[in-house]
Image (cartoon, rainbow, N blue to C red; front, side, top):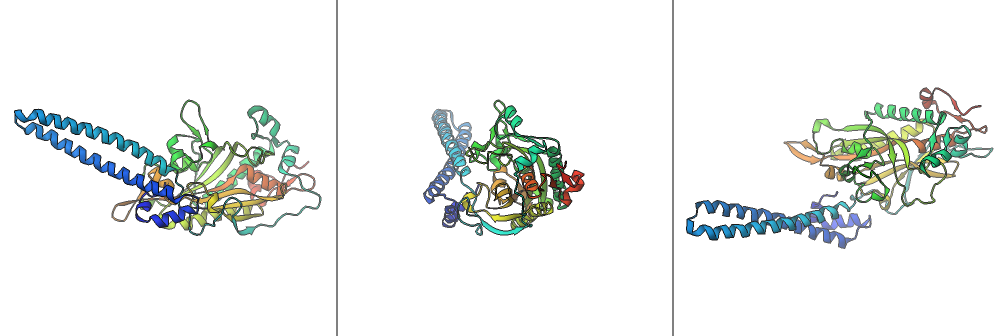
Length: 420
C-alpha cells in the first residue's frame, strides 16, 4: 500500500508517477477526498466522545433538578457517537479497500510500456548451436522416463506432471545447488508454510489484485501460496525490528500453486506453465537507503545461479505496465529455450520498497527511537521446472542425453543424464 501522505503532500508528483502505471488522476483525486473524509470523521468521533465523557462526569456533580435534562443530553451525545462511529467505520473500510487497489509507485528508472516492452540490459552465457536438430524438454525427459505428463493429467488434470527417476533427482540437485549459493551470500534457508491466511496474501499485495490466480481451501480460509515470497514476507509481520537486525535475508524452498488464469491455450506443452511447481525464493528485509543496492545484489545472485549452470540468458528491465502491484521495479532473467527458439522468463527479482511492509506493519527502530518501515525485496533463485527446461534443452546431445554442468555434478553425482 502506498503512503497516504503522498496524496496529501505531493499529489501532482504522485499522480504523475502512477499515471505511468495506468492509474487515472481523477481516481486519485477521489482517493484524496476519501482520505480527507476519513480523517474528518475520525476527528469528529474523538470530539464527540470527549463531549460525551464530559457530560457524563457533569451529571454526577449536578443538582437533582438538572440531572434529568443532562441525562437526556448525554443520551443524545451517546447516540451521536454511535452514528459517527458507524459512518467512520464505513468510510474506513472503503478507504482501506480503495487504497489496497493502488499499485506501488514505479521506480524512476523503470522503463515505460507494457508486456513485451522490456529493455534488455545484457546477456550472459554462450548460446548453444545444434547441427542435428533440437529436441524440446518434453521429448528429452519423456524418452528417459523422467517426466510423465499423461499420468499427471489423469490424476490431477491439465498443467500437472510427474517428475520421476532422473527427473526427480535433477530437481533435488538443482534445489541444493541454488540453496548453497544463497547461503554463501548470507541467506538463511527456510522451509515455510504454504497454506497462509488472507492477511498474509493481502500483506504482500496478492490480494485483492491477483485473487483470480490463487487457489483457496474450501472450508478453512487458507490460500495456497503462489510463491514463498508470501510466507517469507509474513515472517516478520507485526514486528518492530532493531536497526542492528538488518539486513535480514532468507532463502525459502516450497511448492508453489497458481491457477494460470488467462493462460488458456498458452504454453500447454510440457512443464513451462503448470499449476504446481517448486522454487527457491530469495527474500530480504533492508533499510530504505539500501534497497536499490539490495535489488542489484539479488539479481547478481540469480545470475550466478544460471551462469554456474552454463545457461545462456538475458536480463530484462521490466516495463511499468507489466509490474505486479507491489513492485516498484523488476528484473527478469530470460533463458534461451532451443525447443521454442525463444527467450522465456526463468527468474524475476523485485524491489517492493515499503509497499508490503506498510500492509504487514513491519517496522524498524532507528535513531532516537523513531519507527520507520523496512523495505522488502524478493527474487527467484531458481524455479525448478523452468530451470530444468533450460538446462536439458541447452545441454542436450544428439543421442538424447544431457551434459550435466560441472557446478551441478557434486549434487547429482553424475556427468551425463539419460545416457544409454
